[in-house]
Image 1 (cartoon, rainbow, N blue to C red):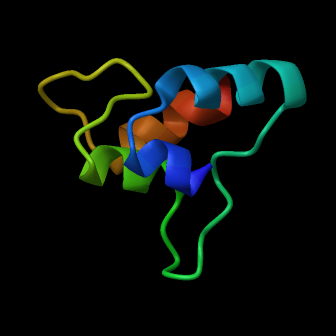
Image 2: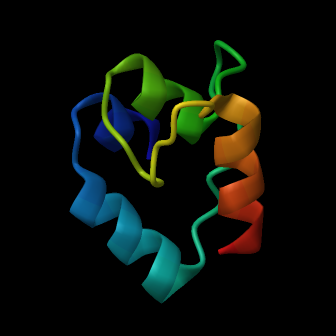
Image 3: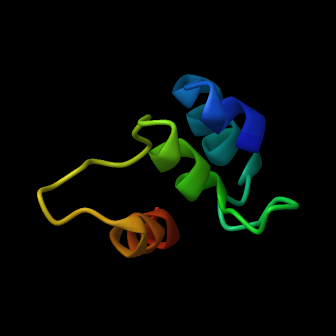
Length: 64
């Protein structure tokens, strides 16, 4: 998931989360969450707002 997030494969991530309930909150070896990797790569998994940050993304992911 982290690899896909870093390379902008958002459709793959959406598929894995919807079909297999993949967890976006599991850290990698660098202690980064999938959402953090996606944000660092300038790829969006959730809607961005002016006040968007990783905490807003985590909240949105937990609600999904």
